Image 1 (tube, rainbow, N blue to C red):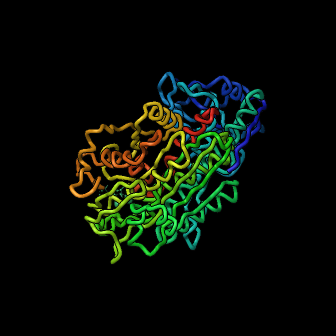
Image 2 (tube, rainbow, N blue to C red):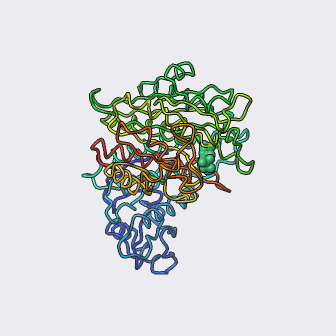
Image 3 (cartoon, rainbow, N blue to C red):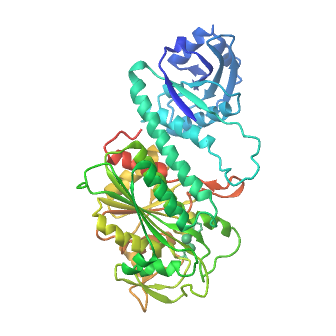
Length: 497
Ligand code: BES
Ligand code: MN
Ligand code: ZN
């Protein structure tokens, strides 16, 4: 999909289809009125008929008898006097979805002329790029016969004033870089477990390293044994697929600058192990590597944006399978940190691979560590599919992540992590048990991880409810690549839009 800038005056704009916002009371923006004048009032006449719906995202196509702009696609911003973030997004989605069904051509948007509550021009342009890319995403690589190519938008221009053109171009490049990261995360998530193995994830990291000049290292089973990663290895034991620990480093600042470390759960298929999951919907456990996918996607985005900072991606990855060599419920394993863990349920495997990666993260002397994991069904019960669960010890880190989530429309919601919950993880035989009972399952999972993250500032994102959609539109969401990219952009001191 190609994005461009047009900085000719609105009256002189030439385009196969101009996309214009319509405010409450069927009013045009200032530039909309100029276009209307250039079309001899064709737009206001069409609006006067009252066909355009008032709900945000409702559209109406107007054919104008003009050589300059043959069509005008009107989109309603809803009936609030001040346009909010959500109404703007609905409008963009409605307009671009409609545009995608039309004949290919040169589309030019003026949607960003609308003032949006607390969001600047950069945000309004970036949001259109994001949504255009989201609507254009397909996962068709595994079909032998391509269906009729479903219609989609191929080209979108943004009309901006000359003075804003340079910064608008930077905004587009950043939003496209983030969309590329989202697409990578979606592709990895959607690939099935027989193809997207730990080895495949490692190869993907190596490819990224080549393309974006990142440093990559893949630790094999022997090296994990030497590091005494007994928790990670206990999960990998039941599978014939070799486990990997991927270390992917982006260096955009001096080596003395402490990095942000992102740690992603990479269970390429979660059967539950000996504590086997029920059959229904087990296919969705191919998505149990979406944390890992978001780390690779975010590193891709950061590298393409060339952010002036250091970021390390850590991906512990293996399969959770039952077999004669698999870990048994009740087995006690020793983590890299030295803490012993009673594995009461082999299906609580994510925390076992993460805890060793979190201990390994200490060697990077990080300024902050964020882990991302499809960790608990309990988080889905608590928050559903809209908000990612956020757990953090430090309030500043939590509020930065919350704000990035809001700005990027990839929201998270902070959950408690009081010490009292740690009681539930007591084991009569080991330092800690790997499950804490049914109550507050997402919280006790976070509490388990917190025991391995004492050496640095740390946050945990439970994406079990947000990483993919089920049902007819089953598919990976690419979340939380936008949240993480926005967080890192802000932290790098760059403007987040
Ligand atoms: N990958 C699952 C969590 C999950 C389940 C995410 C369903 C999304 C949808 C994780 O490994 C798991 O199985 N967790 C258990 C933990 C329990 C045994 C304490 C769960 O949530 O049931
Ligand atoms: Mn599990
Ligand atoms: Zn899992």
